[in-house]
Structure formats: structure tokens, C-alpha cells
Amino acid sequence: MRADLLVLGAGVAGVYAALAAEARGARVLVVSKDPLPAGSTAWAQGGVAFPLDEADLEDHLRDTLTAGRGLVEEGVARSILEDAFRHLERLRALGVRFEEPPAREGGHSRPRVFHLGGDRSGLFLLQALLAHLKGPVLEGYMALSLLRGERVSGAVLLGPSREVVRVEAGAVLLATGGLGRLFPVTTNPPGATGDGLVLAWRAGAVLRDLELVQFHPTALPDGSLVTEAARGAGAVLLNALGERFMPRYDPLAELAPRDVVARAIHQERVNTGRVLLDLRGIPDLERRFPTVVASARALGLDPLREPLPVAPAAHYLVGGVRTDLWGFTGVPGLYAAGEVASTGFHGANRLASNSLLEGLVMGERAALAALEDLAWERGEALPLARAEPGALEGLRRWMGLEAGVVRRKEGLLAALAYARGLPLEELAPQEGVRREEVEAGHLVLLARLLLAGALLREESRGVHFREDFPWPSGRPYHTEWRGERVERVWV
Image (cartoon, rainbow, N blue to C red):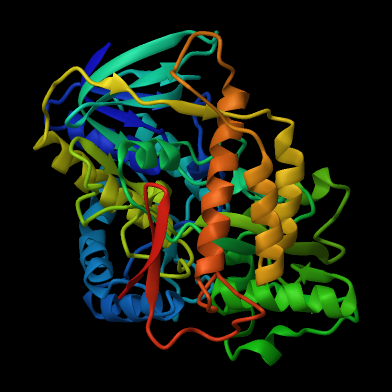
């Protein structure tokens, strides 16, 4: 198979990138690991955070910088926010009808989060974009390996019947999402196994800040998300004693940035046994948050009558493949956008609902940059690593215990020793390999990198909290993986 641009991933970043490339006459092939609508975008309850107007742009930037705890690249954030207005109009031109008025979510100083379908914003947005896509989508195909010579020139895919398909392309855009399935409780879909991260790393790209994993503060016991907009609408957090506790932790109370709320919930669960989210004060709850109500009732809970038990769950990879403002990874022919990428927009803690905005802006930018960089050569398939899927149960248990909301050196060392003890088999892409084996290999490898990065980050910053280093360092830094070596890179 052959394409100008090969897009791996069919969430907001991948599909919007494909639309931008198609509008310029490019032959685009989109690959979706699961049937459409797929990926974390379809699970996103929150909406898209757009600056309300030119005057609000500075406030939105300030909120983003505050949430990012010193690691946001201000020039990057300003550039993305300045581009937001054009994309809002573009979506409206495509027929997307956002609800009014916008909602307020954690860390935002005012309501600026635009929703669709109540708490089904990601799904409705993705469906609207897919409706305009003209080119083919390979559903049920997983990327095993990138083709690499002097540049990245395509990928090897694993089909639903375990067949191997080679796709040659002028450039490849990774939009494969995060690694939430590395943790025992996550708001991510089953396909969030860090595939693009491993593909990029093997091709020579830099992985940055993998230890910066954002935990959504309010997930139900099965990992179902209770959107931040519910707290913006009036839901309050209670401990097991029935006390509202968030005002003790932050002046913004339930609307503090996610890292603050997640740690507060963790501490109250330690202190009192459990934490509950009371949604009964929200008018017209079933209409405004149908997904939350349905998820609760599926667990035998009734949010109209009782507070819901909640806990933090792995939600969003703040780090990722390091890129520039055009999605370029530094490896010729390879681009990345969305959660898989680390642009500098989110810093050390993503501001609520900034992710879909970044997916739109950077999806288009990466596609346009890739079209300026098309070249064909016959590359060789890079190797992959596989592991036994059964190994993930123990690994996830370690990750939940030692790499969650609160971390410490001894626990991280023990978890890293466990991850390094799991066998990984390296091989060339071949017929018959199972998707589950490759996904397990990706997660074992990423666990090793994440845990080593968490050990190197001897500070607490944003989503990364170390009990043994409870304060941020005097000067912010990134952790960057170049091949087998990780180092601090000072900002």
C-alpha cells in the first residue's frame, strides 16, 4: 500500500490532520487500531477549551501557565491559543454546534470550555470530523513497526487476522494517544498502550517527561470518568465523615487544578477511608451529564439519590514524543500530534480540556508540515518487542501502588526492578504475532522508562509528587530519553 501521508491513530488529532491534508489534495491513509469511533477522544467527556475572545487569551494563557507548574513553554502555549479562534470557526463551518454557554472546569478562571452532547463532547466532535473524511480508514490494524532508512518512510501493520501489511508513505504522522493501560485503574480505552511512543523511540525520536502522568481526580471504581464539568456545575467532594474538604487544600476548592484535587482526594482516602462526589445539587443532572448517570447506574449507584465513591485514575500522558511547534519529532519523515506528543503546551500538569484544542491545532500543523517534507525511499522495518500479556497484571499492580498519585524512591526502585525482570523478546515484524503480545511488550518497555524517569525527577512538580522530595526544584527541568539513556534537560 502507498500514501502521501500515513496517519496512525483516528482520534481528534489524527482525523483533523487527515482532513487538513486531504484539503490540499494529498493521498491520506488513516489507520485505527480499533473500530471507529476509536481512541481516547471518543471517551472524552469534557469539551474543548477555547479563549472566549482576544481579551480572554491572556487569562487562558495565565491559567495554562499556572496549571503547568513551570514547565509550560510560554511561546508554544501562546501560539496554540492564538490559533484557537480560527479552529473554532473552522469547526462551526464543518457543522459542529457547541452548546451555550461554555462551562467552567478545574484550573480555569472563567467558563470557556465548549461542550457537545452534555458529557459526550469527544464522541460528538470525533463523529462530526469523521463525517467529512473522504479517504480510507483501515480499522482494526495496529502499527507494529516503522520503516526507517535515512528517514521514516512508512509502517508495518498487523491486521485483524494477524496478517502483516506494509505501507509506504512520504511521511508518517503519529496520533496514537497515551499509555493509560499501564495502570490498574484508568479512564483510557483498551487500546491506550503507548504504541506510538515506542515506535518513535525505536526510530530515534526523543521521549520527554514520561513520568508526568495526569490522574483524573474523580473516577468511579471501574475507571469510568466523572467529568470535571460536574464540579464546575456544583458537585462537591466529601470525605467518609461527610465533610467537604477541598477548601482546606486550595482557595479554588473543587475547581483547583487536577494535580491539587487528585492529591487531596488521595490524602482524604488515606485519612478517612473513602471520598464521595455529591452531584445532587446539579439541576437537571440526567440531561446535562447522561454518561455519568449511566456509568453510575451500571455499577448499581444512583447519583440522584446518593454521593458517588470516587478516586483518582490514570487519565492523560502529559509527556510524550518531543516535537516542535509543527509536530516534527526531529526524525526526518516522522511527525506527532495529540496525546502522544510533548509540545510544551501542558507543562507538568495539563489544564482541563486543553487537550482537544491541542489535538486540533497541532493535528493540522503536523499534517501541513509533513506535506512539505514528502519523500519516498525503501526503508527497513524496525524490530518490535513482545511480552506475555499475563505479565501485565502484576506490572499494573506495581504501577498502581508505586507510580500513582504519590511516589517515593523505595517504591519506584522496587517497581522498576519488577519491570526489568519481565522478559521481553525482540523480533522482526512477522505474520502470526498477536496484538496482545505487542501491546504487552510496549507497556513493559514504557514502564521501565517511566519509572526510571520518575526516579530521576527528584522533586515534586505538577502531576509528579514525591514524598521524599515534596518541593519543586529551584529550576525546572525535563527528563529526556535518547535511546537507552535518560537525562535532565534544564529549562
